[in-house]
Length: 545
Image 1: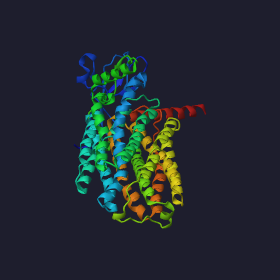
Image 2: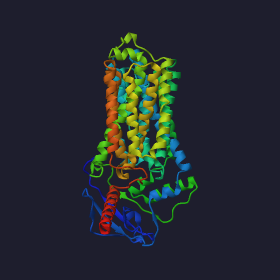
Image 3: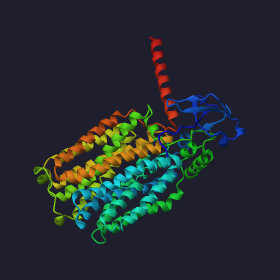
Image 4: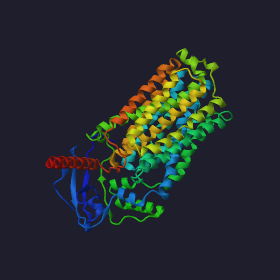
Protein backbone atom coordinates (compact mmCIF):
# COMPACT_ATOMS: atom_id res chain seq x y z
CA UNK A 1 0.00 0.00 0.00
CA UNK A 2 1.65 3.19 -1.18
CA UNK A 3 1.10 5.90 1.42
CA UNK A 4 3.24 8.49 -0.33
CA UNK A 5 2.34 9.00 -3.96
CA UNK A 6 -1.30 8.11 -4.56
CA UNK A 7 -3.28 10.76 -6.37
CA UNK A 8 -6.33 12.29 -4.72
CA UNK A 9 -9.79 12.25 -6.20
CA UNK A 10 -11.73 15.04 -4.53
CA UNK A 11 -15.27 16.14 -5.22
CA UNK A 12 -16.18 19.66 -4.11
CA UNK A 13 -19.76 20.70 -3.45
CA UNK A 14 -21.02 24.24 -2.86
CA UNK A 15 -23.38 24.49 0.09
CA UNK A 16 -26.14 27.06 -0.28
CA UNK A 17 -29.20 27.92 1.74
CA UNK A 18 -31.42 30.79 2.74
CA UNK A 19 -29.05 31.85 5.53
CA UNK A 20 -26.45 32.98 3.03
CA UNK A 21 -23.89 30.22 3.40
CA UNK A 22 -23.39 30.03 -0.36
CA UNK A 23 -19.81 31.21 -0.15
CA UNK A 24 -18.55 28.05 1.57
CA UNK A 25 -17.09 25.29 -0.58
CA UNK A 26 -17.74 21.82 0.76
CA UNK A 27 -17.11 18.36 -0.55
CA UNK A 28 -20.15 16.14 -0.75
CA UNK A 29 -21.51 12.89 -2.08
CA UNK A 30 -20.48 11.32 -5.35
CA UNK A 31 -22.95 11.53 -8.22
CA UNK A 32 -23.85 7.87 -7.70
CA UNK A 33 -24.63 8.36 -4.00
CA UNK A 34 -26.51 11.63 -4.44
CA UNK A 35 -28.83 10.48 -7.22
CA UNK A 36 -29.79 12.29 -10.42
CA UNK A 37 -33.15 13.44 -9.08
CA UNK A 38 -31.35 16.03 -6.92
CA UNK A 39 -30.25 17.80 -10.07
CA UNK A 40 -26.48 17.58 -9.60
CA UNK A 41 -24.36 19.02 -12.36
CA UNK A 42 -20.57 18.79 -12.49
CA UNK A 43 -18.70 21.73 -13.94
CA UNK A 44 -15.96 20.55 -16.26
CA UNK A 45 -13.41 23.13 -15.20
CA UNK A 46 -11.81 21.78 -12.04
CA UNK A 47 -10.07 23.80 -9.38
CA UNK A 48 -6.61 22.91 -8.11
CA UNK A 49 -5.47 23.32 -4.52
CA UNK A 50 -2.00 24.28 -3.33
CA UNK A 51 -0.75 20.69 -3.62
CA UNK A 52 -1.95 20.28 -7.18
CA UNK A 53 -4.96 18.14 -6.26
CA UNK A 54 -7.97 18.66 -8.44
CA UNK A 55 -11.46 19.38 -7.18
CA UNK A 56 -14.59 19.62 -9.28
CA UNK A 57 -17.37 22.01 -8.33
CA UNK A 58 -20.72 20.29 -8.01
CA UNK A 59 -24.01 22.12 -7.96
CA UNK A 60 -27.60 21.06 -7.65
CA UNK A 61 -28.90 21.83 -4.17
CA UNK A 62 -31.94 24.05 -4.09
CA UNK A 63 -30.80 27.64 -3.46
CA UNK A 64 -33.15 27.86 -0.45
CA UNK A 65 -32.69 24.32 0.87
CA UNK A 66 -31.37 24.02 4.41
CA UNK A 67 -28.16 22.08 4.96
CA UNK A 68 -25.98 21.25 7.96
CA UNK A 69 -22.54 19.79 8.66
CA UNK A 70 -21.47 17.15 11.18
CA UNK A 71 -20.12 19.88 13.46
CA UNK A 72 -23.44 21.70 13.39
CA UNK A 73 -25.33 18.46 14.09
CA UNK A 74 -23.09 17.59 17.05
CA UNK A 75 -23.45 21.11 18.45
CA UNK A 76 -27.24 20.82 18.21
CA UNK A 77 -27.32 17.33 19.75
CA UNK A 78 -24.77 18.17 22.45
CA UNK A 79 -22.92 15.96 24.92
CA UNK A 80 -25.18 13.42 26.58
CA UNK A 81 -25.95 9.78 27.30
CA UNK A 82 -24.39 8.53 24.04
CA UNK A 83 -21.02 10.20 24.70
CA UNK A 84 -20.99 8.98 28.32
CA UNK A 85 -21.39 5.38 27.12
CA UNK A 86 -18.75 5.91 24.48
CA UNK A 87 -16.39 7.32 27.12
CA UNK A 88 -16.63 4.04 29.05
CA UNK A 89 -16.16 1.74 26.04
CA UNK A 90 -13.23 3.63 24.51
CA UNK A 91 -11.88 4.20 28.03
CA UNK A 92 -11.49 0.43 28.45
CA UNK A 93 -8.89 0.44 25.68
CA UNK A 94 -7.00 3.08 27.66
CA UNK A 95 -7.19 0.97 30.82
CA UNK A 96 -5.65 -1.91 28.84
CA UNK A 97 -2.93 0.33 27.37
CA UNK A 98 -2.01 1.80 30.77
CA UNK A 99 -1.80 -1.65 32.37
CA UNK A 100 0.46 -2.95 29.61
CA UNK A 101 2.73 0.08 30.08
CA UNK A 102 2.74 0.03 33.88
CA UNK A 103 3.58 -3.66 33.99
CA UNK A 104 6.96 -2.92 32.38
CA UNK A 105 8.31 -1.21 35.50
CA UNK A 106 7.10 -4.15 37.63
CA UNK A 107 8.22 -6.98 35.34
CA UNK A 108 11.79 -5.74 34.86
CA UNK A 109 13.14 -6.18 38.44
CA UNK A 110 11.31 -9.51 38.80
CA UNK A 111 12.89 -11.04 35.68
CA UNK A 112 16.24 -9.48 36.52
CA UNK A 113 16.28 -11.62 39.64
CA UNK A 114 14.42 -14.71 38.42
CA UNK A 115 16.28 -15.16 35.11
CA UNK A 116 19.58 -13.58 36.26
CA UNK A 117 19.46 -10.99 33.44
CA UNK A 118 22.11 -8.27 32.95
CA UNK A 119 20.99 -4.64 32.83
CA UNK A 120 20.81 -4.25 29.04
CA UNK A 121 18.58 -7.34 28.69
CA UNK A 122 16.26 -5.97 31.38
CA UNK A 123 16.04 -2.70 29.42
CA UNK A 124 15.28 -4.62 26.21
CA UNK A 125 12.13 -6.11 27.77
CA UNK A 126 10.76 -2.58 27.94
CA UNK A 127 12.25 -1.28 24.70
CA UNK A 128 10.95 -4.11 22.52
CA UNK A 129 7.36 -3.22 23.49
CA UNK A 130 7.90 0.38 22.43
CA UNK A 131 9.61 -0.75 19.24
CA UNK A 132 6.52 -2.77 18.37
CA UNK A 133 4.32 0.23 19.15
CA UNK A 134 6.47 2.47 16.99
CA UNK A 135 6.05 0.14 14.02
CA UNK A 136 2.37 -0.52 14.64
CA UNK A 137 1.12 3.02 15.31
CA UNK A 138 1.43 4.46 11.76
CA UNK A 139 0.17 1.22 10.21
CA UNK A 140 -2.93 1.15 12.41
CA UNK A 141 -3.37 4.86 11.65
CA UNK A 142 -3.41 4.14 7.93
CA UNK A 143 -5.88 1.28 8.44
CA UNK A 144 -8.13 3.66 10.41
CA UNK A 145 -7.99 6.37 7.74
CA UNK A 146 -8.66 3.82 4.99
CA UNK A 147 -11.13 1.34 6.47
CA UNK A 148 -12.54 3.15 9.48
CA UNK A 149 -11.61 4.12 13.02
CA UNK A 150 -13.62 1.33 14.62
CA UNK A 151 -12.04 -1.28 12.34
CA UNK A 152 -8.48 -0.18 13.12
CA UNK A 153 -9.09 0.02 16.87
CA UNK A 154 -10.84 -3.35 17.12
CA UNK A 155 -8.20 -5.18 15.06
CA UNK A 156 -5.34 -3.72 17.10
CA UNK A 157 -6.92 -4.66 20.45
CA UNK A 158 -7.65 -8.19 19.22
CA UNK A 159 -3.99 -8.53 18.14
CA UNK A 160 -2.67 -7.23 21.50
CA UNK A 161 -4.97 -9.54 23.50
CA UNK A 162 -3.83 -12.64 21.60
CA UNK A 163 -0.13 -12.03 22.11
CA UNK A 164 -0.60 -10.65 25.63
CA UNK A 165 -2.03 -13.99 26.74
CA UNK A 166 0.65 -15.93 24.84
CA UNK A 167 3.45 -13.88 26.43
CA UNK A 168 2.39 -15.18 29.85
CA UNK A 169 3.38 -18.64 28.59
CA UNK A 170 6.83 -17.61 27.27
CA UNK A 171 9.31 -20.35 28.25
CA UNK A 172 12.56 -18.39 27.79
CA UNK A 173 13.84 -14.83 27.47
CA UNK A 174 13.94 -14.84 23.65
CA UNK A 175 10.30 -15.90 23.33
CA UNK A 176 9.25 -13.28 25.88
CA UNK A 177 10.98 -10.53 23.87
CA UNK A 178 9.33 -11.69 20.63
CA UNK A 179 5.83 -11.94 22.09
CA UNK A 180 6.03 -8.66 24.03
CA UNK A 181 7.12 -6.96 20.81
CA UNK A 182 3.97 -8.26 19.12
CA UNK A 183 1.90 -7.00 22.07
CA UNK A 184 3.46 -3.58 21.50
CA UNK A 185 2.54 -3.74 17.80
CA UNK A 186 -1.12 -4.20 18.77
CA UNK A 187 -1.09 -1.57 21.52
CA UNK A 188 0.16 0.88 18.86
CA UNK A 189 -3.42 1.08 17.59
CA UNK A 190 -4.99 2.17 20.89
CA UNK A 191 -4.54 5.95 20.20
CA UNK A 192 -7.16 5.53 17.47
CA UNK A 193 -9.72 5.40 20.29
CA UNK A 194 -9.03 9.13 20.80
CA UNK A 195 -9.48 9.75 17.07
CA UNK A 196 -12.82 7.93 17.11
CA UNK A 197 -13.99 9.56 20.35
CA UNK A 198 -13.03 13.10 19.34
CA UNK A 199 -15.10 12.86 16.15
CA UNK A 200 -18.30 12.47 18.20
CA UNK A 201 -17.77 15.53 20.41
CA UNK A 202 -19.21 19.04 20.07
CA UNK A 203 -16.70 21.87 19.69
CA UNK A 204 -17.50 23.49 23.03
CA UNK A 205 -15.25 22.09 25.77
CA UNK A 206 -13.98 19.28 23.51
CA UNK A 207 -10.71 19.30 25.42
CA UNK A 208 -12.51 18.68 28.71
CA UNK A 209 -14.49 15.81 27.22
CA UNK A 210 -11.40 14.09 25.81
CA UNK A 211 -9.85 14.29 29.26
CA UNK A 212 -12.68 11.99 30.44
CA UNK A 213 -11.03 9.00 28.83
CA UNK A 214 -7.67 10.15 30.17
CA UNK A 215 -9.07 9.28 33.59
CA UNK A 216 -9.21 5.66 32.43
CA UNK A 217 -5.46 5.72 31.80
CA UNK A 218 -4.88 6.74 35.41
CA UNK A 219 -7.34 4.06 36.59
CA UNK A 220 -5.47 1.42 34.55
CA UNK A 221 -2.10 2.46 35.99
CA UNK A 222 -3.36 2.33 39.59
CA UNK A 223 -5.18 -0.95 38.99
CA UNK A 224 -2.01 -2.56 37.62
CA UNK A 225 -0.01 -1.65 40.75
CA UNK A 226 -2.78 -3.02 43.01
CA UNK A 227 -2.98 -6.17 40.89
CA UNK A 228 0.79 -6.64 41.15
CA UNK A 229 0.67 -6.13 44.92
CA UNK A 230 -1.86 -8.98 45.17
CA UNK A 231 -0.58 -11.39 42.52
CA UNK A 232 3.22 -11.09 42.43
CA UNK A 233 3.94 -12.43 45.96
CA UNK A 234 1.71 -15.50 45.42
CA UNK A 235 1.05 -16.38 41.77
CA UNK A 236 4.01 -14.71 40.06
CA UNK A 237 4.59 -12.60 36.93
CA UNK A 238 2.98 -15.02 34.43
CA UNK A 239 -0.42 -14.69 36.05
CA UNK A 240 0.08 -10.93 36.25
CA UNK A 241 0.61 -10.83 32.47
CA UNK A 242 -2.51 -12.94 31.95
CA UNK A 243 -4.81 -10.88 34.19
CA UNK A 244 -3.42 -7.64 32.72
CA UNK A 245 -4.84 -8.70 29.34
CA UNK A 246 -8.42 -9.06 30.58
CA UNK A 247 -9.52 -5.41 30.04
CA UNK A 248 -8.82 -5.94 26.33
CA UNK A 249 -11.15 -8.94 26.35
CA UNK A 250 -13.88 -6.85 28.00
CA UNK A 251 -13.42 -4.15 25.37
CA UNK A 252 -13.81 -6.67 22.54
CA UNK A 253 -17.04 -7.92 24.12
CA UNK A 254 -18.46 -4.38 24.13
CA UNK A 255 -16.99 -2.92 20.94
CA UNK A 256 -19.91 -4.15 18.80
CA UNK A 257 -21.85 -1.23 20.32
CA UNK A 258 -19.37 1.34 19.00
CA UNK A 259 -20.53 3.11 15.83
CA UNK A 260 -18.20 4.12 13.02
CA UNK A 261 -17.41 7.83 12.89
CA UNK A 262 -20.03 9.90 11.05
CA UNK A 263 -17.18 12.09 9.77
CA UNK A 264 -15.45 9.05 8.29
CA UNK A 265 -18.69 7.87 6.63
CA UNK A 266 -19.20 11.31 5.13
CA UNK A 267 -15.59 11.46 3.92
CA UNK A 268 -16.07 8.13 2.13
CA UNK A 269 -19.35 9.25 0.52
CA UNK A 270 -21.63 7.15 2.76
CA UNK A 271 -23.97 9.98 3.70
CA UNK A 272 -26.82 7.63 4.58
CA UNK A 273 -24.73 5.82 7.19
CA UNK A 274 -23.50 9.15 8.56
CA UNK A 275 -27.10 10.31 8.96
CA UNK A 276 -28.03 7.02 10.70
CA UNK A 277 -25.16 7.49 13.17
CA UNK A 278 -26.13 11.09 13.93
CA UNK A 279 -29.78 10.05 14.35
CA UNK A 280 -28.68 7.36 16.82
CA UNK A 281 -26.75 9.94 18.86
CA UNK A 282 -29.72 12.31 18.83
CA UNK A 283 -32.06 9.54 19.99
CA UNK A 284 -29.74 8.50 22.85
CA UNK A 285 -29.30 12.13 23.95
CA UNK A 286 -33.00 12.94 23.60
CA UNK A 287 -32.36 15.84 21.22
CA UNK A 288 -33.83 16.56 17.76
CA UNK A 289 -31.74 16.32 14.60
CA UNK A 290 -31.12 19.55 12.66
CA UNK A 291 -33.41 20.07 9.68
CA UNK A 292 -32.12 19.84 6.13
CA UNK A 293 -29.52 17.80 4.27
CA UNK A 294 -26.18 16.67 5.65
CA UNK A 295 -23.25 17.98 3.60
CA UNK A 296 -19.53 17.54 3.97
CA UNK A 297 -16.37 16.33 2.32
CA UNK A 298 -15.76 13.27 0.20
CA UNK A 299 -12.13 12.19 -0.10
CA UNK A 300 -11.40 9.03 -2.05
CA UNK A 301 -7.71 8.84 -1.18
CA UNK A 302 -6.83 9.16 2.50
CA UNK A 303 -4.02 8.44 4.92
CA UNK A 304 -1.05 9.71 2.87
CA UNK A 305 2.12 10.55 4.76
CA UNK A 306 2.99 13.50 2.51
CA UNK A 307 -0.30 15.20 3.46
CA UNK A 308 1.26 15.81 6.88
CA UNK A 309 3.98 17.88 5.21
CA UNK A 310 1.92 20.26 3.09
CA UNK A 311 2.88 23.93 3.65
CA UNK A 312 0.08 24.52 6.17
CA UNK A 313 1.00 21.47 8.30
CA UNK A 314 4.76 20.98 7.90
CA UNK A 315 5.85 23.08 10.88
CA UNK A 316 3.02 21.72 13.04
CA UNK A 317 3.95 18.11 12.21
CA UNK A 318 7.65 18.50 13.00
CA UNK A 319 7.05 20.37 16.26
CA UNK A 320 4.35 17.90 17.35
CA UNK A 321 6.62 14.94 16.65
CA UNK A 322 9.26 16.40 18.94
CA UNK A 323 6.64 17.19 21.61
CA UNK A 324 5.35 13.60 21.51
CA UNK A 325 8.94 12.30 21.65
CA UNK A 326 9.83 14.46 24.67
CA UNK A 327 6.57 13.59 26.42
CA UNK A 328 6.99 9.83 26.08
CA UNK A 329 10.72 9.97 26.88
CA UNK A 330 9.98 11.87 30.09
CA UNK A 331 6.75 10.13 31.12
CA UNK A 332 8.03 6.57 30.83
CA UNK A 333 11.37 7.75 32.19
CA UNK A 334 9.79 8.96 35.43
CA UNK A 335 7.78 5.71 35.67
CA UNK A 336 10.96 3.62 35.40
CA UNK A 337 12.99 6.00 37.59
CA UNK A 338 10.44 5.55 40.37
CA UNK A 339 11.25 1.85 40.66
CA UNK A 340 15.01 2.29 40.16
CA UNK A 341 15.44 5.12 42.69
CA UNK A 342 13.37 3.36 45.34
CA UNK A 343 15.41 0.16 44.89
CA UNK A 344 18.70 2.07 44.99
CA UNK A 345 18.30 3.08 48.62
CA UNK A 346 19.22 6.55 49.91
CA UNK A 347 19.56 8.97 47.00
CA UNK A 348 22.21 10.89 48.92
CA UNK A 349 24.67 7.99 48.66
CA UNK A 350 23.94 7.48 44.99
CA UNK A 351 24.50 11.12 44.05
CA UNK A 352 27.63 11.59 46.14
CA UNK A 353 29.12 8.52 44.53
CA UNK A 354 27.92 9.75 41.12
CA UNK A 355 26.46 6.35 40.37
CA UNK A 356 24.32 3.51 41.57
CA UNK A 357 26.47 0.43 41.79
CA UNK A 358 25.15 -2.47 39.75
CA UNK A 359 24.23 -5.29 42.05
CA UNK A 360 25.33 -8.84 41.40
CA UNK A 361 22.52 -10.84 39.81
CA UNK A 362 22.61 -13.18 42.81
CA UNK A 363 22.09 -10.21 45.12
CA UNK A 364 19.31 -8.54 43.13
CA UNK A 365 16.34 -6.99 44.89
CA UNK A 366 12.74 -7.99 44.41
CA UNK A 367 10.13 -5.28 44.81
CA UNK A 368 8.86 -5.20 48.39
CA UNK A 369 5.40 -4.22 49.62
CA UNK A 370 6.92 -0.86 50.63
CA UNK A 371 8.14 -0.37 47.06
CA UNK A 372 4.70 -1.19 45.66
CA UNK A 373 3.07 1.30 48.03
CA UNK A 374 5.46 4.09 46.98
CA UNK A 375 4.87 3.24 43.32
CA UNK A 376 1.14 3.39 44.01
CA UNK A 377 1.46 6.84 45.57
CA UNK A 378 3.38 8.23 42.61
CA UNK A 379 0.91 6.59 40.21
CA UNK A 380 -1.99 8.31 41.97
CA UNK A 381 -0.36 11.58 40.84
CA UNK A 382 -2.02 11.11 37.46
CA UNK A 383 -5.43 12.03 38.93
CA UNK A 384 -4.51 15.54 40.19
CA UNK A 385 -2.59 16.02 36.93
CA UNK A 386 -5.75 15.37 34.93
CA UNK A 387 -7.84 17.64 37.19
CA UNK A 388 -5.30 20.42 36.77
CA UNK A 389 -5.27 20.21 33.01
CA UNK A 390 -9.08 19.92 32.75
CA UNK A 391 -9.20 23.32 34.43
CA UNK A 392 -6.48 24.83 32.22
CA UNK A 393 -7.00 23.37 28.76
CA UNK A 394 -10.19 25.27 27.88
CA UNK A 395 -9.06 28.46 29.60
CA UNK A 396 -5.44 29.10 28.60
CA UNK A 397 -5.48 26.94 25.47
CA UNK A 398 -3.69 23.81 24.30
CA UNK A 399 -0.28 25.34 23.51
CA UNK A 400 0.16 27.08 26.88
CA UNK A 401 -1.13 24.00 28.72
CA UNK A 402 1.52 21.85 27.01
CA UNK A 403 4.25 24.35 27.82
CA UNK A 404 3.11 24.63 31.45
CA UNK A 405 3.33 20.85 31.91
CA UNK A 406 6.82 20.61 30.42
CA UNK A 407 8.23 23.51 32.44
CA UNK A 408 6.71 22.32 35.72
CA UNK A 409 8.11 18.81 35.16
CA UNK A 410 11.57 20.33 34.68
CA UNK A 411 11.16 22.33 37.88
CA UNK A 412 10.28 19.17 39.85
CA UNK A 413 13.34 17.34 38.50
CA UNK A 414 15.75 19.96 39.90
CA UNK A 415 15.49 18.90 43.61
CA UNK A 416 16.52 15.35 42.65
CA UNK A 417 20.02 16.67 41.86
CA UNK A 418 20.38 17.48 45.58
CA UNK A 419 20.82 15.13 48.52
CA UNK A 420 17.21 14.54 49.66
CA UNK A 421 15.47 11.75 51.53
CA UNK A 422 13.04 9.12 50.28
CA UNK A 423 9.94 11.10 51.27
CA UNK A 424 11.16 14.18 49.38
CA UNK A 425 11.99 12.01 46.36
CA UNK A 426 8.47 10.57 46.46
CA UNK A 427 6.91 14.05 46.58
CA UNK A 428 9.05 15.38 43.69
CA UNK A 429 8.28 12.33 41.54
CA UNK A 430 4.58 12.62 42.45
CA UNK A 431 4.37 16.23 41.22
CA UNK A 432 6.59 15.61 38.19
CA UNK A 433 4.47 12.65 37.10
CA UNK A 434 1.27 14.67 37.59
CA UNK A 435 2.45 17.34 35.15
CA UNK A 436 4.04 15.09 32.51
CA UNK A 437 1.03 12.77 32.41
CA UNK A 438 -1.21 15.84 32.04
CA UNK A 439 1.01 17.08 29.20
CA UNK A 440 0.70 13.73 27.45
CA UNK A 441 -3.08 14.02 27.57
CA UNK A 442 -2.99 17.55 26.14
CA UNK A 443 -1.01 16.18 23.18
CA UNK A 444 -3.78 13.61 22.69
CA UNK A 445 -6.32 16.46 22.67
CA UNK A 446 -4.40 18.80 20.36
CA UNK A 447 -3.29 16.35 17.65
CA UNK A 448 -6.72 15.18 16.40
CA UNK A 449 -7.97 18.77 16.60
CA UNK A 450 -5.29 20.29 14.40
CA UNK A 451 -5.45 17.82 11.48
CA UNK A 452 -8.37 17.26 9.06
CA UNK A 453 -10.47 14.09 9.00
CA UNK A 454 -8.68 12.71 5.93
CA UNK A 455 -5.34 12.48 7.79
CA UNK A 456 -6.39 12.62 11.46
CA UNK A 457 -5.88 8.92 12.25
CA UNK A 458 -2.55 8.83 10.39
CA UNK A 459 -1.38 11.95 12.25
CA UNK A 460 -2.23 10.27 15.55
CA UNK A 461 -0.48 7.09 14.43
CA UNK A 462 2.74 8.76 13.28
CA UNK A 463 2.88 11.01 16.36
CA UNK A 464 2.41 7.97 18.57
CA UNK A 465 5.13 6.14 16.61
CA UNK A 466 7.61 8.98 17.19
CA UNK A 467 6.71 9.01 20.88
CA UNK A 468 7.55 5.31 21.05
CA UNK A 469 11.07 6.10 19.84
CA UNK A 470 11.45 8.23 22.97
CA UNK A 471 9.89 5.47 25.06
CA UNK A 472 12.22 2.92 23.45
CA UNK A 473 15.32 4.95 24.35
CA UNK A 474 14.31 5.90 27.90
CA UNK A 475 14.91 2.45 29.52
CA UNK A 476 18.59 2.69 28.60
CA UNK A 477 18.72 6.08 30.32
CA UNK A 478 16.55 5.32 33.38
CA UNK A 479 17.76 1.74 33.94
CA UNK A 480 21.29 1.62 32.47
CA UNK A 481 22.76 5.14 32.51
CA UNK A 482 21.34 5.72 36.00
CA UNK A 483 23.75 3.09 37.32
CA UNK A 484 26.65 5.16 36.00
CA UNK A 485 25.51 8.71 36.80
CA UNK A 486 22.36 9.97 38.47
CA UNK A 487 23.10 13.59 37.50
CA UNK A 488 23.62 12.80 33.80
CA UNK A 489 20.39 10.80 33.76
CA UNK A 490 18.35 13.59 35.34
CA UNK A 491 19.97 16.14 33.01
CA UNK A 492 18.63 14.28 29.96
CA UNK A 493 15.05 14.54 31.21
CA UNK A 494 15.47 18.17 32.27
CA UNK A 495 16.82 19.31 28.89
CA UNK A 496 14.27 17.45 26.77
CA UNK A 497 11.38 18.84 28.78
CA UNK A 498 12.67 22.40 28.55
CA UNK A 499 12.94 22.00 24.76
CA UNK A 500 9.46 20.44 24.70
CA UNK A 501 8.05 23.51 26.45
CA UNK A 502 9.65 25.83 23.89
CA UNK A 503 8.35 23.67 21.01
CA UNK A 504 4.83 23.87 22.45
CA UNK A 505 4.87 27.67 22.39
CA UNK A 506 6.15 27.63 18.78
CA UNK A 507 3.18 25.62 17.47
CA UNK A 508 1.55 27.78 14.75
CA UNK A 509 -2.10 26.82 15.42
CA UNK A 510 -4.14 27.14 18.63
CA UNK A 511 -7.15 24.79 18.42
CA UNK A 512 -9.11 26.13 21.40
CA UNK A 513 -12.69 26.74 20.22
CA UNK A 514 -11.86 25.61 16.66
CA UNK A 515 -14.07 23.11 14.84
CA UNK A 516 -12.58 19.89 13.48
CA UNK A 517 -11.43 20.33 9.88
CA UNK A 518 -12.90 17.83 7.42
CA UNK A 519 -10.34 18.34 4.63
CA UNK A 520 -7.13 20.20 3.94
CA UNK A 521 -9.28 22.25 1.55
CA UNK A 522 -11.16 23.53 4.62
CA UNK A 523 -7.86 24.62 6.14
CA UNK A 524 -6.89 26.46 2.97
CA UNK A 525 -10.32 28.13 2.84
CA UNK A 526 -9.93 29.13 6.50
CA UNK A 527 -6.51 30.65 5.78
CA UNK A 528 -7.84 32.47 2.72
CA UNK A 529 -10.73 33.87 4.76
CA UNK A 530 -8.33 35.07 7.47
CA UNK A 531 -6.09 36.66 4.82
CA UNK A 532 -9.07 38.37 3.18
CA UNK A 533 -10.28 39.72 6.54
CA UNK A 534 -6.80 41.05 7.31
CA UNK A 535 -6.54 42.67 3.87
CA UNK A 536 -9.98 44.28 4.24
CA UNK A 537 -9.09 45.51 7.73
CA UNK A 538 -5.85 47.05 6.44
CA UNK A 539 -7.64 48.67 3.51
CA UNK A 540 -10.33 50.04 5.82
CA UNK A 541 -7.69 51.52 8.12
CA UNK A 542 -5.94 53.13 5.14
CA UNK A 543 -9.21 54.66 3.92
CA UNK A 544 -9.89 56.11 7.36
CA UNK A 545 -6.48 57.77 7.38
